[in-house]
Length: 290
Image 1 (cartoon, rainbow, N blue to C red):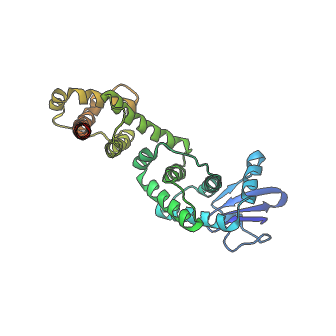
Image 2: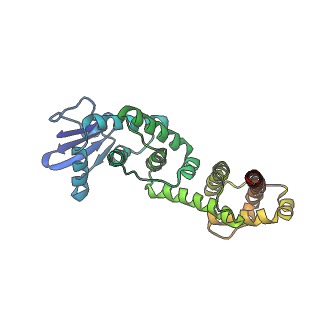
């Protein structure tokens, strides 16, 4: 072994000094020092470091103090434990790389920003809670102040490692949810939805998104009545579910359209109440100023 990055990642030679690899696995580097022998079979995943990626990764680690890497390693382990431990071992490499970069940017006063905090939290609630623990741990132990947005970005890495997907896939699902919320606002002609109502709509659509993607469609015995009574909401619900399914709607989804139309009716009433309250407050202020 030639380098211990942290408790979960080491650099080693296999056979000869021309075959250099990165070994990943929980605790694989714990208590180890350069020159120690290591059984590659104990690693959960072997990462062959080659080309420009290898150089960039090693250069990045050379500029990070070992105690910082260890704290990042502990934070990642905490997140993995909260999710039951069934994550692709590549998370040790990918999330370490992401967090080191984030901490460095924080020190330079520039941080990556996510506009999908509410959507990511709604679509992946378990991973988001684990990500919040990671952020809080890093803030406390590194004496830094990572913003809530960072939990959203960590969530994408955790979800990707949990499902074996590329991180772009969960990001696409969060973007789809944000697009649905924006569609509702556009259909209603509302430019600025209050944060609490946006959160309610986001959460409801996230549950719908999961059901639709899993093919779990509910029935609604009063669907025809609702279609007649809630025409505008019904039309909006059809648009949203059509965006999710991305193919012609069948009678199979009628129940889901009905449930969504009912939710949208109540949500629109809440939005009206908020708007009316804001107007009354504005009128009162204008009267007081006269």
